[in-house]
Image 1 (tube, rainbow, N blue to C red):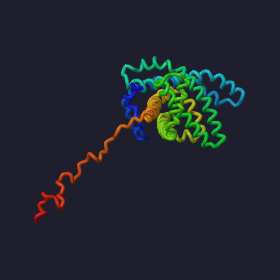
Image 2: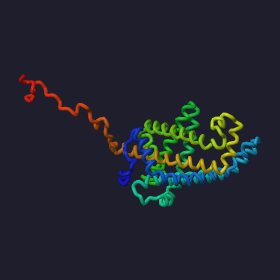
Image 3: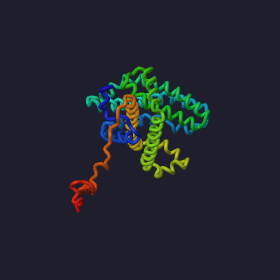
Length: 308
């Protein structure tokens, strides 16, 4: 773990310092992260466009619809596996590149392979356990379901940093992930909530922008069901695929960076690492009264008015 003490994200954070660190890291590593994410997004967008969702919307027979969905399970599974592998690569780069410049994009692709199978197994277990938690949450209240989803997302964010830094043992990763999430439970849940809200807002804004050339109005497309059905045709157009990939490439790196911030914050708090102190700018300002000599007290021996 000593090698990670020099990692720029390794420190105790507040919510403000977490967001500042996320932004600074994103800017510093932007080019490499953007290029990796762009390639990943283009592959994912193209693969997703091959799945004919328009055909499903025109089927009214439930049995025929079920049969078509079964036929799409394999392509969707392959797309999901590709997405998981790309996620592993991004996390590896964010974790290891800052401590050693020799961990380039290419070495990240190669070295992240050994984490893929354990990560896949844990994700299957998390999906199963998360589904049960969400169902139980629905029985309690709708709010319980949202809280369960938020808890599952928080667990998900810790998995790869724990695995890559502390070892790829599946059992140890699960135990350690749960421990770190519960260590600062409400803080972790709160930070993840803020992050999700920011991601949703940014995604909606960018989605509206890239749909303008095709629909003319993002709001109109949402409110008008007839226009909404046209979105399926739009998603298969080359220009939309490229624009959507660019938007995804801008957003994708934020999640592994934030995941590392969560992990390093929890680890630093365990080791009682002090946060980076910030200098109060008020203390550095020159005040007007500092330009003049302070008056002597009445009983000071050098006071010229004492003997008057």
